[in-house]
Image 1 (cartoon, rainbow, N blue to C red):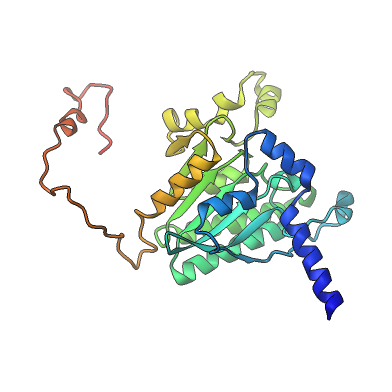
Image 2 (image 1 turned 90 degrees about the horizontal axis):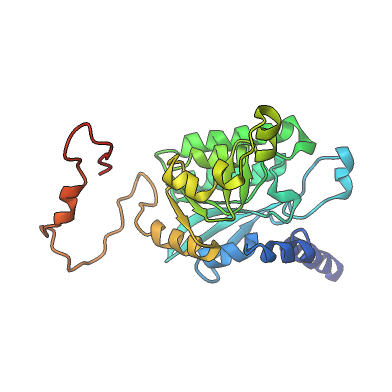
Length: 285
């Protein structure tokens, strides 16, 4: 029994270290937190209940059988934010660049199914290069399952996506189908394919920021809803934001006491509408 427990603790330690200390240091050098550090900030202290910590990929091609990491590049589970239940997944860029495999996708789908069943928000911390190319169609099929959950959860439970790194392909298709998207300035990007592919196909030179940076998506394309200075500010903003949302379509929004009169006059609201219908300014209220 003691040997079994020792082996379990060994695998648990391996899962917590992700892709190794060297890759964690590289993540920190970029001003980014690791997948688990992000969950520590997002969730109430001590509330995180991890699921499928020891899941490993099932790919044997291209030397993948010798490259196995417990957890397979994503940390999934549930926790609370200010006492309210949420389900979360946090992609680990230190493991295969956070790329999605078949098992990786199954972990995400599992917590999304659980969220819909009990009626709780889903928060995805996305830091992924997209589908894991070594798994080919199996990886793409995994994304199809995630997309299906995005559709089924729409209008049932709130879905919040935090783009925490350079994401491409399916890693941004799925967030684009969620309800709200937060990004980190200068370290998170959303694009179908990166600048190198654009240059190869169209011979156009474009930067990551211009192609899919946080400022681009919050001021020009309106793909994202807000941009923040760093990981910590983004995660704290997500904590505050969840407080304004209902847990599901079966519950009302949270109510809190306020001393702000309901009939207070706010003159600045008169400036939202343009002075003429041909004005380029549009009303978003």
